[in-house]
Image (cartoon, rainbow, N blue to C red):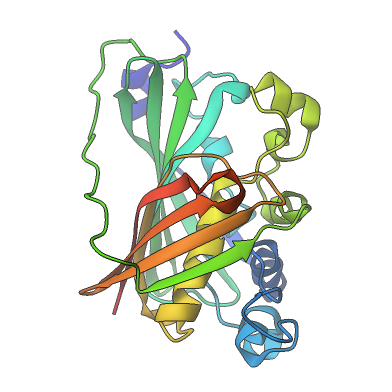
Length: 291
């Protein structure tokens, strides 16, 4: 069968060196809309935006961890692990969680160790949890968990895994911001390492069941974290301790994201919807943990 859960879970972790430069960080920030903040009168030269785009004052948004080292190990590399043999057209990114052990440097070299941490049987689909732990000479940097949703690969009799959903945030949001997604956003974002043709090739998108290419879920993930940091955390990227979300729907380039934020003790709850599709949910169960 395409997924051998026992083999995947028993496989030896893969380790490799990754490295990144300030240019990689800047490219990632541009890919999630830095320098184009609609809340700013002149976003390309606004000091708050230059923290993401100018090398002399560069701050690293923690979600950069999902693409550091050209996005590997990551969702695509997880599909080449022992026991995993699936059709890329059936694959969707189901969720992502990130734990920060310390602030990310603007340039660095580290060791990334990845493994399949769990395989869940959801009946009509399988969910793989790809865990990547990254450390440099000074110690742990971050831990990434990617939930990989594979349509049509469930029903093998495995554990369904966790199904707990968070209760919706109570009351009106503390902040609501709209973030337009450029028509070429996916083409720019994919240069940070995720070259899945689903995000660029119309013919491939049709095979996967979409009318046109869709935005990377991790691009929406980054856009959302930047909005939270900029509006509720004083622009201080070092305050982020953890960040998790569940991808509930697709985003098409050219749409507008409506990001609603609720302050809670030590964390921010977030929901994200597509304005042009009556607020259709694209991120849910989203939490930014902070100091």
